[in-house]
Image 1 (cartoon, helix red, strand yellow):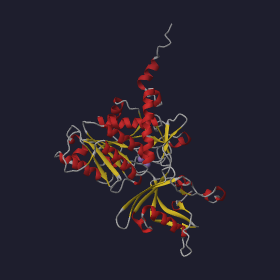
Image 2 (image 1 turned 90 degrees about the vertical axis):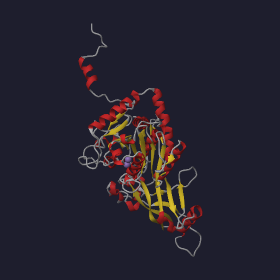
Image 3 (image 1 turned 60 degrees about the vertical axis):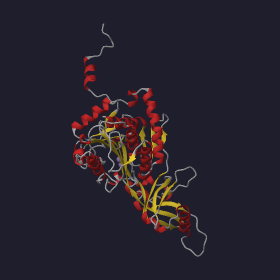
Image 4 (image 1 turned 180 degrees about the horizontal axis):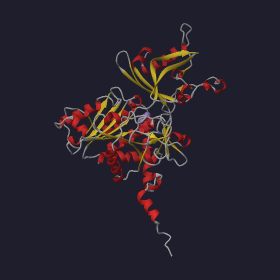
Length: 469
Ligand code: MN
Ligand code: MN
């Protein structure tokens, strides 16, 4: 008589040798699942309130100050346990906690980006046509333009007036506030438009934002609707039409962060690439106390347009900061960087059952399979990427396993299906070991993106484990 429970040689061997991927919820206790869900309440609030790099930067500075961080002053000597932040032009921010070990042993860097695809105003945006007032725009980052029409929009940014004073504009998010919209052609008259390719369905110069339609009553003036809008803007913000030339005004979807699914297992909202990693990274560093290595969390700008510019990670603001920290301990910044480790905290494409032909299922990231470790991104034969070494991947996977982080690996789509990049390459080019770690996203770069609460929580755990290593 054989014992039915006894495993066969093949079963035992399979258990020992083969991977057995499984939905993360099946590997978590009910308490852990509840913790993940409650963690995402704060996350939904963050993506509802922080829809631009400036708003996310201000929120990070506020949270940092509340947690005892001081503005970085290179002339003030820092000691282990000290917490500082560097606000780079209100659009990117570095938070650091000084470690117990000498900085020459390297720092633990995490870098997420706080800019997201959106629609920017041009420098001469305001015009009237057919007695409607509109804004001309120039989109920011990679978007499918047709997705951004007929979506309720909010407006955020700053205007520098002729006298140099600055006014903040945030409108369209609060209950009762007006919103804006890019119109699209009705289907009844779209015979010709429907023949266009999807890429050309709505063209860049057709992304015009509707902002008003009532005239200023005065027979002596033309373009009465435009004048009426400018009058409202002058009364509310004290700006004239000419002030738009020195403004940064960004149009974003007015959606709130919400639960998705009957089971509330997912979060829907705008700008989750990459504020899902920004939020989790920020939460992680704010928890760090008396670390061994100096911990540095970067929330950067301009990733979506290639990281160029003085608030993007292709600029020198990060190595300058490291150089300043190194100088305080009498060592060179580049020696610190050479000994440093980095997680490039950015999202990956989650496999979509409706469009699964663009992913190769064995190597695609899946929602609810945990935080994604992405060895390389790029396109066309790994061009434009930093390909993390086997040694570094090995170090990170064992760090994650030890810390109880549920993780998976991911590749950004099938070979030659397309591709993309992150900030990883720019940090790797500073002689730092870097790997992409982040959350899988559905509908990435759309006005409304989807993530899983479990993956978001696991990203937070991953960054925390990394900082505490
Ligand atoms: Mn990203
Ligand atoms: Mn992106």
